[in-house]
Length: 64
Image (cartoon, rainbow, N blue to C red; front, side):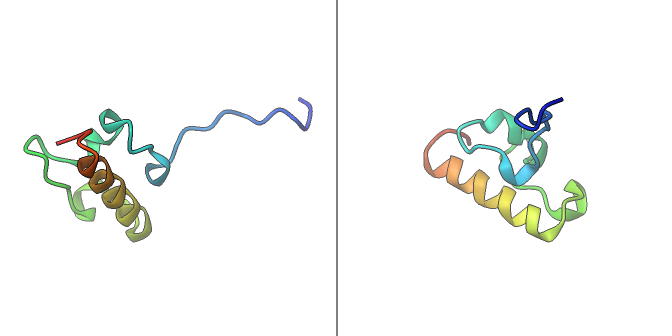
């Protein structure tokens, strides 16, 4: 493996693009409420990032 090749890694929750609301369905209820950390199991930093991404998506009318 050469140095220019980077292994593929999956996105962490804060890295989810706001243009892909289907990736965030794990963090919202069926009615669209954002789940708290107690249920998502995310750290506080990641939870804030997910919340920000969901709200950004909502503001752009991409997700409900």
